[in-house]
Length: 502
Image 1 (spheres, rainbow, N blue to C red):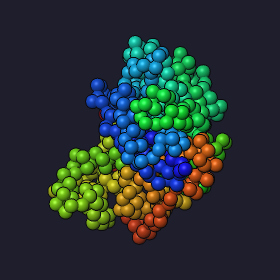
Image 2: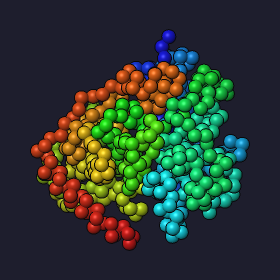
Image 3: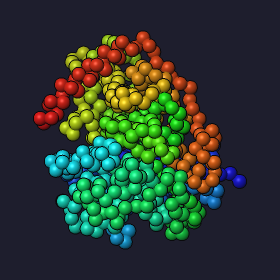
Image 4: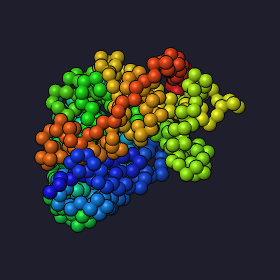
């Protein structure tokens, strides 16, 4: 009898259900369509929770049918999602409002209020990070101030992934990493803090908080009604899981000292671990092991800049790809690779989404003229995305966290051209993983440990994680990129005054 595991990766754009065998081989996968609502106001980034759950159930059944796996051989289910944002249900588990994505920044006024009241720094001291508008606390306070009729109905508040777990099992639970990384408890006590909730101004929400668990804990089992609609075996264990950034680290096996994980996806995520809570970072989160922390520096856009660029300005590459019968992204890689970095001064500001360097930051191209080519613009977007990662990785290094190699994940990590640009700019080897769904794999590994398929993380990494050969930096490019990065930093410094007064 073989052992299989399901990893569900609930993302900002769509969600994926992936079935793995215990050796990390993908047996099948299925994805939901885009879940994003049309904005109902400035800063709103929402999704329909009922439609999300319906789409997830369809994907689970589709993945099982495609795999040919007997559902009884699926030993566990792990769920991961972005952190921050928030989802909530009513007193009887009913849907009472849309869910909020992590890019939601309707609560900018709440952050300003916290700063005026002098509680902002106190909150940051308790959560050991830098609070922004897309966190659950400010969003819940926004509902209290602006949509009180919804706020008063809240019976349970949770993360995106926790809602899926809740629908699978009927249990309101979360994990320490995702909920702690979303600034909902005291990082020193690893528990809810009455003082924190009073500072947020949502102390009545203490009773609506989910149970806190370690990532590998089995929090519940698949209900009978869920079994009928999904094809899962009733009683299949569901583990607590983790935030997607930690799931990507686990899915790439990046636990050694000196190894950073960079996730070039919807967000620019940069992370490593230590025994210390370090000041000035985006966040310090609970890690895989007690007494250690996931140290993170991030902003709200990386590969999403490329997604925007290819959607709005990608027609030329699409036409070329169709004419030659090759991948659209292969054409883009060729265009990027044909540009000599020393011959172009086009610079891209990779700020299509929040949170960013400033609440008013927007993406932009600099140094465009009549001779600028489409290829140069493609190249500038790739460089800009690598620059925002360098910005964050420098923060981690300056905090005293050693760097020897970067494990790069996310959609753009599939491109060797992008990997080489990252290597040249970061000046360290870039190592990929032979799995296109590292977040789902990480959550499946957690489920496998909880269900007894693996002894521990190390056993899982030995069996299920396959590392690709490293891509080494070209040292001849260092002077070129040192100069270009310095100019990128200088431009952001100059623009900061504009953003501040906008």
